[in-house]
Amino acid sequence: MLEYANLKALAVVVSEGGFDRAAKVLHITQSAVSQRIRQLEEKVGQSLLIRSNPVVATPTGKRLLRHYSQVQLLESELRAEMDADDPNHPTTVRIAVNADSLATWFLPALAGMFSRHAWLLELIVDDESYTHHLLKNGEAVGCVTTTEVPMAGCSSEFLGTMEYLCVATPEFAARYFSEPSDNPSLSDTSSFNAINQAQLAKAPAVVFSTKDKLHEKFLAQYFNMTPGQWWQHTIPSSESFLEAINLSLGYGLVGHLQAKPLIDRGILIELTPERRMRVPLFWQHWNIKAKQTTLVYRALAATAQHNLLQV
Image 1: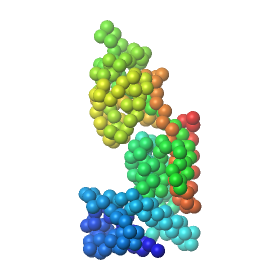
Image 2: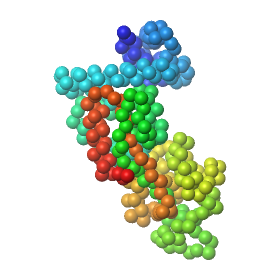
Image 3: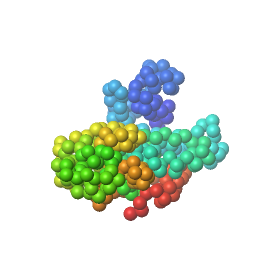
Image 4: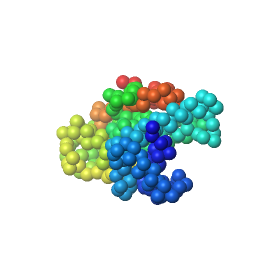
């Protein structure tokens, strides 16, 4: 049997990034934390931590963290069944989600449910093509991901599709995407529908992060362009990303839930109405009988039904 005090020490060391911070969280000495980790490593016969800065788990350490998180969730559910949700010992539900979902439909889906239960929501934000790694490593009990095939020990449920529109302000479009002989009205989007590779090579783009490959796929699919053939601003914040486009720093791909209201108000225009990118989203979670993951999925699915494309 594994000592769960030692497993907890492992989880806190990884989450805090080091032994000293973990000791403060656990209210024990740093040497006591080290001793618990050493006992756990001796028990499994393998190293569980890479002593870097910050400290990270080894593959074996990640498997133990996943096990510990699953047991915590099941114990929370058992406690809730026996005593009802206990506000003195709230359950923490860790979910990995992409920034675009978080900025639009995700929180409204869960707000009511978390308000009704004695649960705490802990979100880990990452690109939708990477969130499933957080689930695999045991850092989250569920994730919104583009990965359809369920990972080992997990289930995958389709939520809906986010459609991305290539947009810019009318002023930016007039500066970079109109021919010299043109004199387009800023509200006349038909003047920008014949965007070409040469124009895109000169117009700065706004990209969410180096992990985000959506813009790269868009230019490859529709304009046969490869990385290095365009300029880009990199702004890893969903709110600031959209603000940068609104401030005419560049053009970019914006999810339909954010883009369409701004287009309707004339703040942005769609540069390529016939060329959009669709990103299907799935909910993956552990195959354990915990009501938290079941209720989270039901809430997400109900909201996604009304906000995401069901194709």
